[in-house]
Each structure stands twice: as structure tokens, then as C-alpha cells.
Image (cartoon, rainbow, N blue to C red; front, side):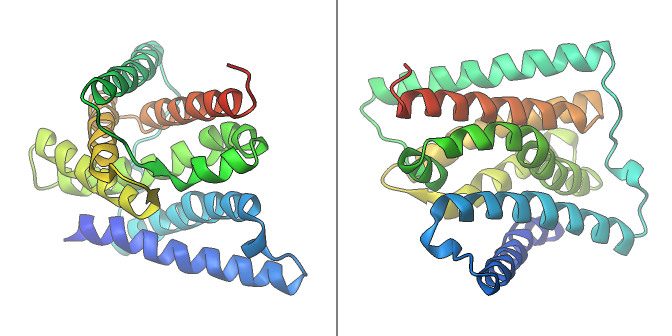
Length: 231
């Protein structure tokens, strides 16, 4: 129940934080409701950054846990090797999944971020550094550090990875549009398994955070090239 609460509670709290941020900006004459790109950046910073980071600190303090509950160290050679392997694996799985989906005539839903970015491709470029600085670290802190870490206290590591990955994948349903939402969630689940496994193997949150950030950055970079006719 704690893992479920962390997963969905963080999203609800994050939505409130984003709404408050948007209201404050409106007070200065900046209306994010008419500027989807600005709202996307605001949501990214306030949700994955401020909310996820803040909740992590509160959770650790509430349970009287030290920060070593979420181990984070400078990657050593093994960690770097696992990170590189993880990035290659995620991108390989994405290509394989796309090929299978296409051959079966299936459709995958689209994340709202892509829709906004297609209207203003410059957003994709901004999301590249944010993937490394905010999205990767923030989401891995919550889903691998807290959710998987909490499940790991009472479950076998493999079960903790599977359940944490399922929760991570399910939360994406709220940001999808179009047909094929279950296909998208299924892909997210498989990719999350890799992130969970690398965290369990290295016991270093920096590894899945960099893998996640790099994976997203490659996707946003490719989306920018596609939207601008660069490829």
C-alpha cells in the first residue's frame, strides 16, 4: 500500500504544486494555459524535480531513514559499464518493440509531451538537458529509490522490481492520448524492468538515473529532428 500511495499520491500532489505554480505565474501576467510549451516545462520542473525530490526528503524523515536508504554514489568503472549497457539495451528494446508493433499492425498511444513538441519543436531541445537534470533523477528517485526500495524491504528483489515497474508503467496512462494506451504501458513496463534491474545490481541510483535521462534525451533529440525535417 505504501508503494501505491507513493506512486499515485506523488502525482496528485504534483498536480496541485503545478497548479499553484501556474497561478503564481498568472499573478505576474504569465498565462500558462495558453502556452502549452511553458506549461510543459513548468510541469516537468515542479513535478519530477520539486515534488518528487521534496516527497523523498519528507518520506525519509517520516520513516526516520537515512539517505543511505536511497544509495547514490559517483559511478565506478562497473557502474559506467552497466550504464552504457543499460542505455544500449533500452534503445534496442524500443527499436524491437516498434518493429513488432508495426508488423502486428498495432498502434501505440502518444504521450502529450510529443503532441506539444510537434507544435513547437524547440520544446524537444529544452527537454534534452531536462531529461538528465530533472526527469531521469526525479523519476528514478521516486520509482526505484522509494517505491522499489520500500517493496524490497518485504519482497524478493525480483518481485520488487516487477511491482515497481508495473506501478511506474501504470502512471503513464494519465499522460497518453489516442489508441494503443495498453501497448505504450506495456513497453514502459519492459523498459522499467531494465532500470529496476540495474539499480538492484549496482545499488547506485545514479546508474538508472543516467540511463533514464539518456534514453529520454535520445528520444527527444530524434523527435526534434523528425519534427523539423532533419531526418
